[in-house]
Length: 338
Image: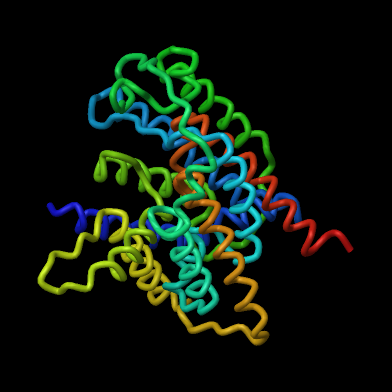
């Protein structure tokens, strides 16, 4: 099957799960600080737990090579912080604004456009010089068990290959820690009309595993998909040439289609336009910050947090920490400082 068709189908499934679970990493992070609500946070942690086990199992069986995102310290620190702030301003994370387009949110569309354009500018566009400022990736030659993808012998850093031990060891310890947190962290009560946090978390994790098996090189992502859509659509206007849309670009299309179908079926689709025009400016700024952050850091909340943490990638751990800091700083600045 054509990889683009696979990406579209996985995206549709992803969009359905996102919409029915009301899954947004901005809300998951923000709510823990603002309202002490951990419902979505636990959903995300459960998905990461499922993927941690699933990715390692797939690698051990030889179905995939683990391929963590490159560790560029400044990129993940600065990019993570900017991305975290941008999520709050945009009213959603990279996946949140994408699936909400399918629900009819005009502000999500505006945020996504500025997110995609800015990320495209940073990745191979007029702002690509920023990447040289961030420095070069820090890699290792350690490849315990040969489970990691390598280029000229260089392997992107994870806790396992940094310590030069079988990745199963680190994965099991991480999975047990997540399980303990999920069991003993009391769940905030919430009335849901779609997937509850357990069903949603398991479903999201399984979609990530399916994506890895489909794409082979990496599981789910959002930033790369938007970059592919914008750069391909605007750069290749010769209709006699094949359009080089890829797996991730079609995944984005699938997310919007899947979310639209799910919202339509649940009678939750309607066009939503904000009453205050200033909201458009805010979400545009948020999209720009998210695009700059994710473009330079090598990924967004899906690429780093959902898909990167199950690898125990050093890059994704750093990005996650600074995304939390950026998110909570903007929450404090907008809502709590007064």
